Image (tube, rainbow over all chains, first blue to last red; front, top):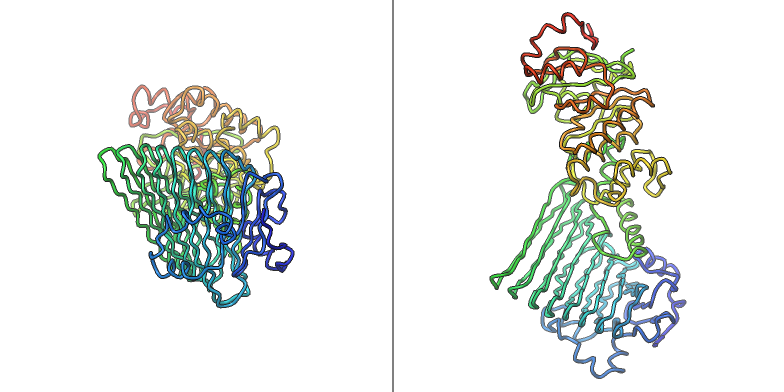
Length: 374
Length: 255
């Protein structure tokens, strides 16, 4: 496997920040580790237990190795979608290429980190993930801007292929700074009897994130779940959507968002489920809590049916924390503050992400630490 | 010795006077049964005693174990040892029953239940609900069992129970009532229990009962006797009866 550099060359201080965003320092608990710092891939290594089951390298290196990979580039995401995709198409510094080999069951999560350490940098990456037929894997990817860096931007194109009978659980954790502009552009294609779970966790302040990843459920009995846990504060602007196009017979989509807004943050939570097959089902759930009067929260669910049998539903609720819930917990000897904190922690229940136990505990720790820091 | 003294309590809900000049007291180490038709103000009374918001005490005084709690918060009352079970407890997304039970015990969520606690959870048939969001998708009986178990774990001095027997099956009723009785007996605490049914009286040894009708107390006597009268003649007639004159009021009527 390719191993471009040693992780040891990444300054310790920077690595520490990535640990807070879910990266595991002890690589024995991970099936593979990938680091792209600023504009270069500095580390890419597969745990020896998983040699031959996973391929992990920089996308540019992968394109050198496999001529067929060209066919996976800009297939799901339109190069001319917007100025950001055009920029990445023009000039990009790499990204991760992950391939789970046919039938491989990856019991440990694969981890990758895209890190910004330089001022005024516009990081442009193009990631490709291929979950081959019958494979099973969990990926955790952390996007971090080092806290000492003021302005920066991250433009990331990701194209994800989940082939027949495969299961891919992809968890993205954003840990940007108050000065980061973030424009992920992602799309996934899901084959027959395949399952794709896309989780997004954003707990720290960020300047501006706008994304609307799409999943194309083309396969028969293909399934997609989009889950997000969002905590908007300090003037962050989060415009987060997810789109599922159900084309395959028996395809299913489920979207669950939990959003908390405070301190001048503005959050728009979008969701679109499009039913193009008579036998498809979708459900969209968005719940938002507004913690003060300075914040703003909007939920925009959209359901489209093009065939008679389509069954798509949604439920959305935004508002302040229920006084009844607070009082209830206070009758159990909790103070008002403890009650509010318990409700918020519960609201950002990582259980919705469908993660294996170890990863679940870790993400829970990240979410709770961020919620408590304020 | 009285654990609770209520003097001339008047309570408004949404601007409407529900309880008017209610005076009564509850004895230490005793269970008391409160009867009354729907809408008579029973839930309002319990809620006002607990200090729940939107139950406005417009006049009167509540003393709990000799402390004037009229102006104290819900949390302060809870910490003094007063607890309440809700008829319709809220569903709280993501807050697990197991975590709440640990908080009731004064434990941190990462602590474990000891053997005795585990046994009680098992007896309440709630083991498989520990990882479930509190009250979300719980049946009526499951809610009631969860409410009562939380209260027992809080180790209270006074339990205010709002219809612990409504909507529960026979087995759950026996379980809930027996566990309340066991707790009250062992801890020497008191209880004030609202009920519409007589079955709970077979399990809870209560000597004191009364009827709340149109925001006023009536008919302080043995609960079984009151229940038999209500069954026979209804609340209005029961209140009008003369039994209380011959038997005397078992609740102390304050001043």
